[in-house]
Image (cartoon, rainbow, N blue to C red; front, side, top):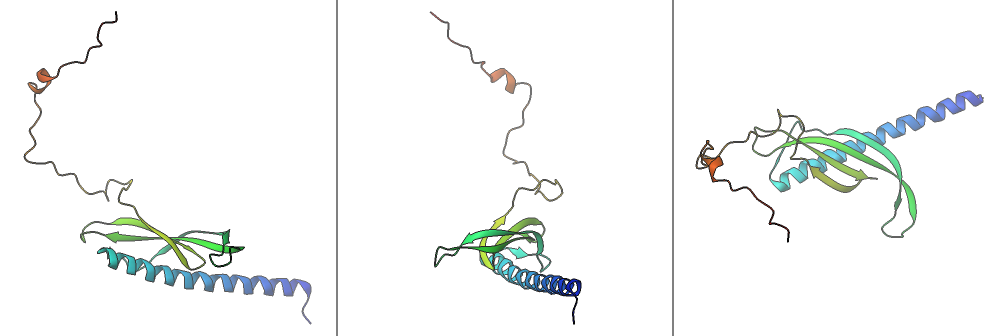
Length: 143
């Protein structure tokens, strides 16, 4: 016969195993969705993997019945490339296995990943004579 503590421990271990297996399946699904999205947009999906950023339990309205139910919202991170030489972060959001959206972040905080700014060759260079052409704005006199 199982004691009460053994039963609680068994339920906790089974719940942890079920949650891990569910997270593994969601990660595989997110990886397929990220790969398909990058392919459809003409981008290169880097490292062939996604990583879970956050997950939380939320209340969601069922689209068919309108009833609110508990669901798990997961956000996965992955990286993509536009030309093959750059690397950009992106996020994919799932709600109980349903794709909420994919956000491609083309503005990065780290200067190593931002593309270099190449100056145009036809743009004139500034020198001391350019400042002489500026007319300062003056307020009209008050009556």
